[in-house]
Image (cartoon, rainbow, N blue to C red):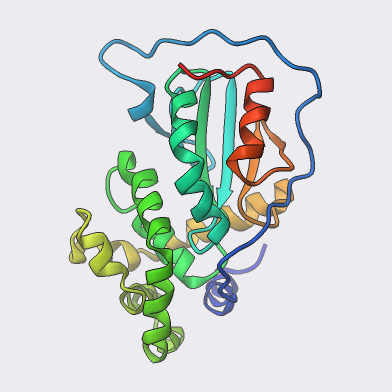
Length: 248
């Protein structure tokens, strides 16, 4: 495994791009399963608001013991991920509401802005992680525009100590103001962005899992541990239905 210093360097020099294609290799078996009956949430709760943090540091929406476990490896600077967030997440949540499907979001970080956003969406309550992620993806073009307008400050971040580096990156990208408008104070954000142990964990988890699972691009989806050769909702939904998922 690369050293932390090397990982931080890679996080700063990785190229920015708006789109990546998925790197799926396998799909579930060809046979179609019978519909799986809905699984009621515990009294006083609903699966659409249930968040669990997995051992892989992913954020699971829905029934953590769902028979169909969907995982997305995503980058916060990936245009295809932003498209899935806008077009796939709303109908996917209808399947999650049944308790039959859970949706886990994990990071495949690929550049410094991605690392900053991945850190900030974890900065508050766990229930807000996916919500803030979706809002950041919806603002992706503005984030890149801010970086282009503040290129000198962005580049200068690479020469700063690690505990200051991602604060500078977030400021150059307009992230501090963006997340402050969504309930994270500027001081809270700066404290999270200066937490080098947490940032190291995000980067190391991303690299380790990518190497172990052969994840090379975003978004990449896994269903019950098997990679799917799809990267958008229109192709993903039939696979969920074939595995037994139904909407309420």
